Length: 319
Ligand SMILES: [Cu+2]
Image (cartoon, rainbow, N blue to C red; front, side, top):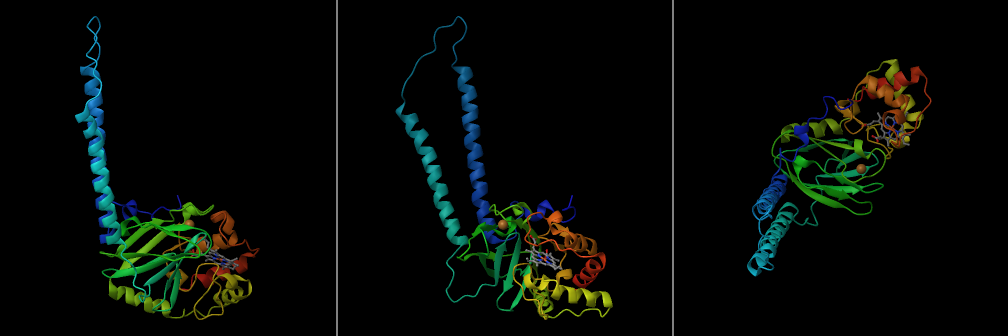
């Protein structure tokens, strides 16, 4: 299984939350679960009891026939109505607590753009861009802007709160306060095409000082080993059209149709978290992207083994 070791159910559970926003949403969910379970049990028990207690018995008289009972009917309509009203207002209250208006002059901490089938993350204050592994600091109320580049996608990391659509031509947002460091997993939650199910989200929440360090490392330019294989790979990357879709900081590659590959090998996973970053996985991806992730918007190139090894060496030196 591709996800072996990369997907821990505890990191993507609504029962293991790590933000006050998810906490509030979870409270409504749990409250509703309790109320609905109670109602279900009440109806089930009464149905069984009444069927047994009041049925016609063999040889016995016909059971008493009653029709209409105003008190019961008022209760049967009134109690559910009260419950629905209660949950309606609780939901409204939770919605405005979780998603207060966004001040016009507040720059988002991060802008996340959904693409078929990967995530772009831009940090406007630091002018850095990365993809798929999204680093965020704990303990701060973050404004996360959500956009889409092509079709509708939907952001959902259960441990961090609400689900939110990403719609082309408009910008949605979420407030996220993360309470403890860790890796939180989620996935695209709006069917967006063939690889939708593999469009996983990986949020890496860090203590502020680790996060600042990460920002600095991302703003730096990769220092490449000067061996001939890496150099050949770097040349191929620029000339075999990779650079028209991908960006690498400090090089002439400034494409935006594919994930930013600056510090690519410093990430743990590739292809939206479905594989570990390793020489073998990079090689196989470049050999035939459509075999690894059918429908992904990266064409198959016809490379010889030498070129593939050179590109792999180059990409895996981008720490
Ligand atoms: Cu999607």
